[in-house]
Amino acid sequence: MDNGVIGRRPGGVDGRLRAVVRLAQEMAAAHTPQEAVGVAAEAARRALDGGFAAISMWERERGRLRVLVNVGELMAGEERLPEDESYPVHDFPEIAEFLHDHWAAGGEPHAWVETAEGVGVGPAPHDRQGAPPSGSWGRVAALRRRGRGSCVVAPIVLHGRAWGELYVARAVGRPVFDRDDADFATVLASVTAAGLAQTERLEEARRLAFTDPLTGLGNRRAVDIRLDEALEAYHADGTVVSLVVCDLNGLKRVNDTLGHAVGDRLLERFGSLLSICGAMLPGALVARLGGDEFCLLGVGPPADEVVRVADELCRRAAELEMGEGVACGIASTGDPIGPVPSARRLFRLADAAQYRAKAARSPKPVVAGREGGPEDPVIRLADTSSARPPERRRFRGRR
Image (cartoon, rainbow, N blue to C red; front, top):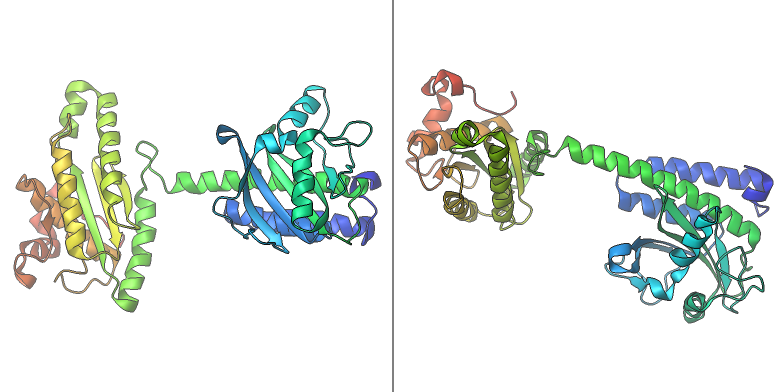
């Protein structure tokens, strides 16, 4: 980067270079897209010596700029993480109209400056006389309304498309942003875009690591981690932890007679049904363990509520146009199932309950601990590994 790009501001070239490096480092350390945009906005505000900064995303399908984060000196109506602060793109058309025309002509995305007096600086979106087009008066009005003297707006370009914008403002009485600031804001927006792209890739990698590719539900790894966390809460304060293990009946017959593509559709259909029922339990995790085996993990709701949802799941699964319903087994710390020192123990109990449901072709879930306390047949089955046929002898659960 040459001096013309970095600019000549307090701290000089070295200071702005350090600001760019710090922005890149802080975004690289972000764990989520929301954290990344917050880091980027605050770093840009500091780097440009602004009093306020925001990052907005262009939601094309809704025709609006949605504010993701506000940082710095917040005015009335501004929140750090707004739930629904957005502005119609036709009120701020530069991101759509100017950028498209500019890029089509072979130019590069570049930041520009607006002032409360309506004087713009930079190659966009002003004409050669410096007067802003009609859409930019929206920014001028916003500056005046919030007591800000000037702002610099930099487009954020991701994967070759306008993704959103970086906005940094100064209060009335502070030095007005100039062309050097716009140049520097362009660099910061570019670094922000690179950081967001990296965060997106990491987020997608994390999503794939914990997601079943066929159904879109959680996978076994997601269940293991969530169940370990849930049992820590159970041991700490008695939080009820319930595990529902489901075996989809008739999948092999569907695969053998209608083909695996149809079998996959059955798995997807049941996965959707499980997701719908799981939504009845706040915070529940629904997952596919593999093959025809699924599970639902509830943390917090009483055992009876989980049983009610599992009963509804069995009823709806029996009405599917393919397959032969589902066998459900439930183990909950809210029932008399004895000590649950580990995730493996809860899995063994739920698996044993599911095995009994399948063997009896039960239309309802079988619940561990509800048929006689320590002599409960599910508990005895879980405690006796030889009680199951060889091919099903090993229960799930990490050792």
